[in-house]
Image (cartoon, rainbow, N blue to C red; front, side, top):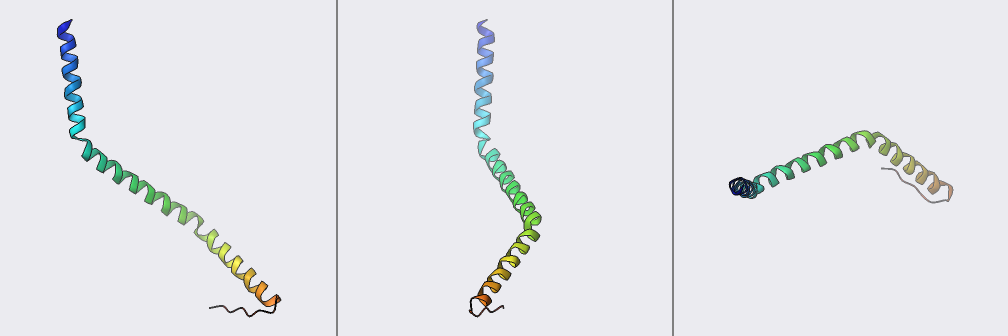
Length: 78
């Protein structure tokens, strides 16, 4: 019984040491994966909403131009 306990504690200690020594490499890989995932999400959102945002800004610009001409102000467009 004592022999099995010693084997298990030795295995756990060796595994903990191995995991601690490899933590820096695993952390760098995890950060790289997170950055890649964030970039993919941003690209997807911009691609999906790009046309809608363009239409929204055009609509707001048109309303501002209309509001400027109806109140007597001068509205200029670039």
